Length: 255
Ligand SMILES: [Zn+2]
Image (cartoon, rainbow, N blue to C red; front, side, top):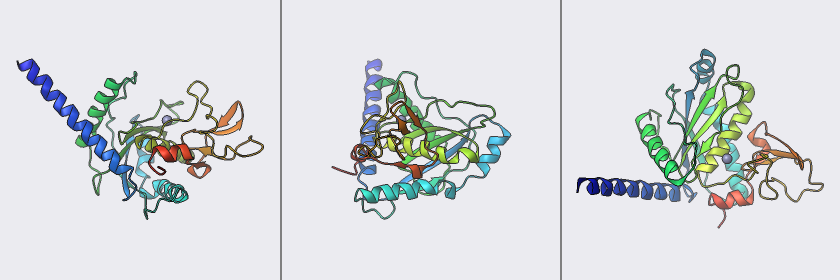
């Protein structure tokens, strides 16, 4: 009896969360109002270098994301005056729950629940309640050579970005944040997971360009600028990336 009641209660909670998540995402991709995105900078390695870097971050640091998305939105006829507004939370030291290794439906759902709870407990950002939360985990490049994968919860409005705590990598950090932000709004990857090469034509910024290589820009969900059929490089800044028609469709810019 109790067991059944507990299961029923759990199912009710899950159904409510799922419904709320669906509503929140539907609202976020209407593009009738400004989307509020909060970035939570987190010191992922506890180092003094990372602390110093985090202290130097402010809203201006991430302004290029706002400008970039506004330009891209205009291109697709989106009329909101400011499609995305970014707020930066004070730097934190606690790391959010790690995403599951296996991305099965149940695992992801449980992790997303944990993340929501964690975000709610650790949310001391100023301003309105965010529509999208991006946790930016900064690592000192002298200690960490390669970063683990960033995650944008597809349709979840929560993303985790692993970034380098150095000015030198600031441009590519913006690219990672932009990519993960779009995942949270429903955009899918447009590269081959085996080779990391952008998929043609969806993952190309200018698929119709002749000659096809080298491309000058990256499609944000393709992730890299294709230089030849077998080589592609990570863009150094958001200004070398565009949102292609396939991604625009996924995030509700075209019907
Ligand atoms: Zn991705």
